[in-house]
Image (tube, rainbow, N blue to C red; front, side, top):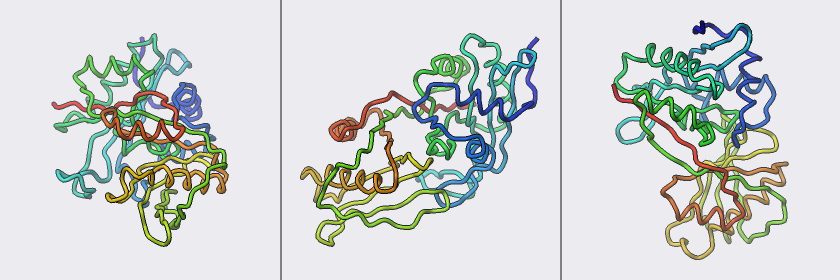
Length: 282
């Protein structure tokens, strides 16, 4: 009979986690993954969780799945601002073998029972994903068995995003000047775009790996929209990243944001699939 237990070897969870074909499960080593899995911070160096638990299900010594859940160290208030007075209950990771739904049920029950005192439980909360995966915390669409389990147990989809990836080749040119800030404690960088010393926009880039960059957001000034400035800024950004040894550049945008999707696809980003976050009201 299957039962919930403590993890026997964290290396087994790492190998299990990395075995899934998900575009933002970057090929990181065990130590990088472990640091992100157990002791993660955001861009400003804040600890993401004040408490975090991991449980597993085994068939004898074979790992069938694991769940990671806990309370965040801060949260987002009613206006969307970060607040230390807010804490969210989050199922951060929930992965199990596709044909072992009974293992998934045990794992989900473990998390919801222990987070059950709260009115609202989140699953795959985007902001609180793992830093070694650029903190993209949503569930990729290929994990249909996990999506089905969550919905069967009262979870609803909160947000849906389209995930994109682009190769960085270094042959991009632009009249835009890149003005980067120093790296944050969370290995992110704010960048201004300038033309003739005038700022025309900016962006934030996360570096989860020495060869990978993740675009968290990008903008151009309102009076510049529709003039091709965004494409020039993105071209200059890719050239800058290539000089840092970056060969892969990822990003995401809301499923209903067709304007942003057109922008990325016009600029050589390939659509990888849809990612989702969930919530449950008790």
